[in-house]
Length: 241
Image 1 (cartoon, rainbow, N blue to C red):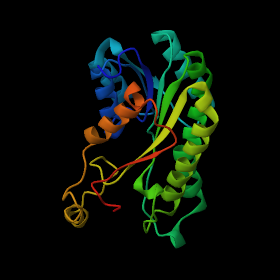
Image 2 (cartoon, helix red, strand yellow):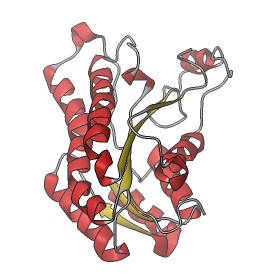
Image 3 (cartoon, rainbow, N blue to C red):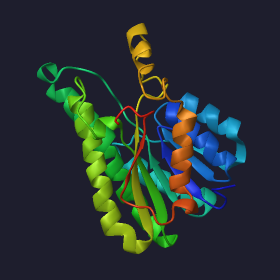
Image 4 (cartoon, rainbow, N blue to C red):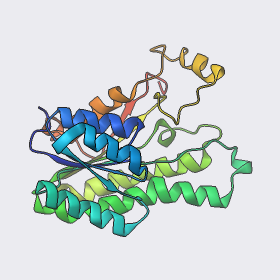
């Protein structure tokens, strides 16, 4: 029970990596607030997970939604110790063809949304005596990938913001780390034959599973990582070696 006594807020929790994080957190003893805009899927998952989970509609670009989610966590479970900024959107377009609208949309969800979340949970984590923030970035936040101009900008930005938060909030007992997944089998991953064949060329010879990322996120949320902060944690099957 690596997360016994912890209360976590996970964004983008209704499906994909967020759903996997939520399932493992509950399994490991945490109480979890599931945040998402996919209300039907989020409510169904919360019902399945039982008393240890509640669902809250959370548009990460809305400061009011963030305040309500933090209040819900404290009211339902008594405190808030962990934030997993997992919600994100993604598309692949050559930089020359990228539009300002799409760039701003991706930055709003992937970067501004995480920024608002970190600010929103800060008072609650201070009141709890500390906590752990896990920002889900990407290998696109470590290197340049063709077609990932907007997405990469958001994930590089999140990587940098993680380091600043870790430096500023460490004295409050708040650790902040970023996780950088490579090709993970979710709805974001291309399913065409060419893409799937390309994953076989990775050093480990396959794509990753959401549950494998969840194990890393769980470690960073737990007290087992109590002296780790401000770091990039890569989980990519060796694709960036």
